Amino acid sequence: MSSQARRLSGVAVSRPASVVLSAAIDLVLVVAFVLIGRASHGEDVLGTLNTLWPFVVGLVVGWLGMRAWFSPRRVVWTGIGIWIATVLIGMLLRVASGQGIQLSFVIVATIVLAVFLLGWRTIAALVMRVRSRP
Image (cartoon, rainbow, N blue to C red; front, side, top):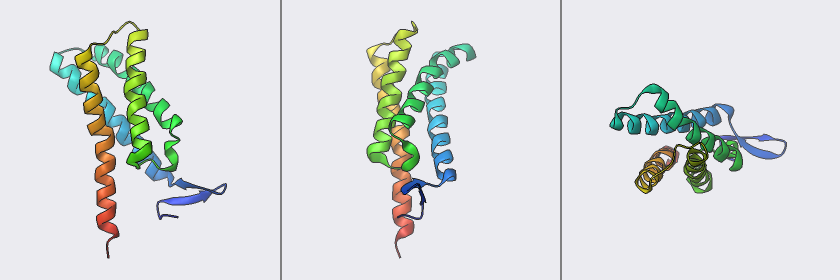
C-alpha cells in the first residue's frame, strides 16, 4: 500500500487531504476553462455561471462514477473517466438546457479539458516518480 493511502474497511483509500486537494484542482481548472472561454468572447458573469454549471455537474458525476477518492491523481482510469464525464455530461446538459453546442466548441472543450484534467495528474505522477528515486 502506498504512503498516500490508508486502510478503510479493508480497501485502500487516498488520504482525505489528497482527495480534497485533487477535487479542488479539478474544480479550479474547470472554472479556468470556462473563464478563459467567456473572456475570449467578452461575456458577462451570468453567462459564465450558465456555461459553468453543466461542466461542474459533469465533473461531479465523473468523480462519483470513477470513485475518484480511491486514486484521485491516477491518470488512467480515474483522470480519463473524469475528463470524459466532464465533457460528455457538460455538453449533454448544455443541449438539454437550451444552450446549444457547436462542433468547434466541443473540440476545444475536449482538448482544453484533457490538457487541464489529465495534465496536472501527469505532472503530479512525474513529480512523485522523481521524488521516490533514492
